[in-house]
Length: 260
Image (cartoon, rainbow, N blue to C red; front, side, top):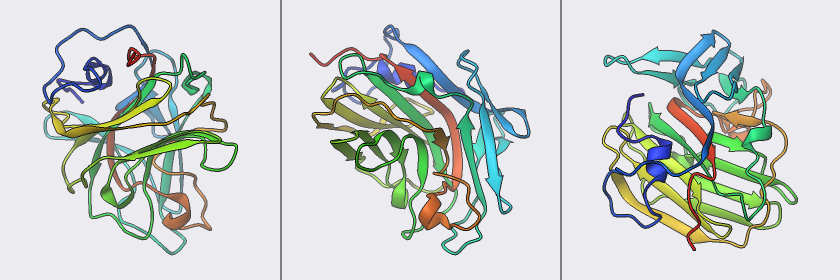
């Protein structure tokens, strides 16, 4: 999607910047993954970051991830529509080929950003969550970074396996509207969620932030986009299947200076 402001552009703004588009050049950093809605073939999403992290599409019970084109020529990824609380349910997720570059690292150098453009295509169910982008699971001893839109409300979660930060944005996404949601670890102890209009770069609501004494965030397993897993015996209540459209899905490390 062609935007005034991408993930790195958003990262240029100071943590407490006013609600105006960023104009400064991006600070030093490393973009590790970027999905713009293009496919290499019917079973794989193309990575445009240059890091060769194409994403494999996993699907079941009639679900699919497809590349769609809007009237303006923009391409995006469409995930299965409709909520489903009784199995079998249409399921589809994207799983990047490798994960090692998406481990943020130690607390001192573990500043990182992940974001996505999100458009809900119908009102979300209150009975099941919707996961957008995550690495690691929630639970004792498990590190995780995660973005979700449960009930249509964006939130970010970070965990070092002992402590966690769960930070929601102060809005519910309107059906049929694109939003840019960005989750940021600004420093070892400062976390933030930002929501922008991707067409203009302007903030939809002021950034929300929270402090937390998290140490190393070292997830294991697989990065997944659009849900937890594909399992024909489970419904959305178990898989947190995302329903709607995603674009400009990005992860970057050390894209922001410390808040010190």
